[in-house]
Image (cartoon, rainbow, N blue to C red; front, side, top):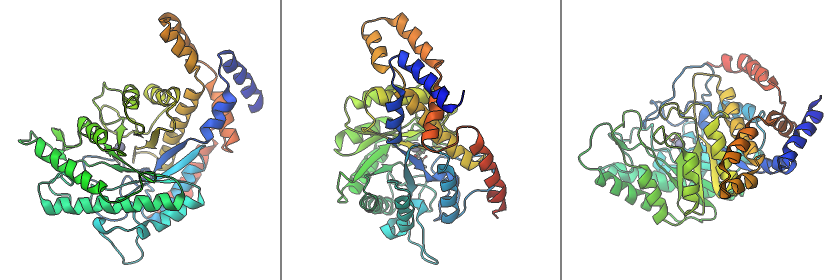
Length: 419
Ligand code: RNT
Ligand code: ZN
């Protein structure tokens, strides 16, 4: 059977389960997913020489890391040429592009420092999401930024946050797509603190000051990302889950952001999505793969990834959930890592769109739990690969492993030749 015949056969199989795969494929083409620039250079950015801080870590030393904007853009283009579906560009403030000799510290960043990225995004018809960078900088004092007891330090980082609001609004105006601006800090303590309330009150006040910067709520969507702990910050994190959820709940227009690497290993974000959808008009996600901790492994088409996508699709929340990838692996070819992670999430969404959600829900509501289990297991062995291949085909991307050969060629010709 050729590709078209295989799709036809698979389409009928899904049809027998009550699923129409054609609209599923068309729908997926329109769903934006935010692609993080920081997979291409191990979260290094262009505005400093120091190490990655903030309690996050990239491990590995695979050759060919992008070292400047041109290389990063080139690599991202290469990766995107193997990704189906609509993308948004996700940038960190540390990726500002400065003209020769020019340098603006983070509290003085301006839209013009991101003009190159706007050009890049516009040419590719992408919106842009943004992140102030509260790490990897000499003004992180004793591991603290927005929650620092040192007023000078806190002021600096508040000014950074405000600058990022202005830049986010600029991104939205230039691209015509709202900008999701995510606030995450690694602020916390390695060992048992004597004051847990003080840093959180300061953190709260700092974010409030950042959000007092005027912006159009239709254009800029600020969020607060929580975390349970970081490396070297094991005992206390100011921006805990309760903190971030409460902040968003009490500040209209501010979204909670859940990163599925930021919880205890037996907690699942797939279970948390619906809980938040009961209360928040919109929420945001960082999609990653934690292995025993917030290790940020490349996203795979695994059980939890599939379950998260199902929760968004079957709750009709594709317009309410802002989806962004957030992982970084420096131990393997970075472009393949980008592709595998992005495409895994695409697969998860397509799989969710090809699930007979209404039928399964009715089984649950009628307490037909045995049949529900049987049907959910049945779905696992459906010919999903043929539907995926058709989606890739319609998006003009080769469905076999040809893309990997091309990346290996690129590695040889481009990546390994970098100094
Ligand atoms: C860190 C957070 C945060 C970062 C990025 C680079 O644990 O997940 O989102 O990964 O901002
Ligand atoms: Zn994250």
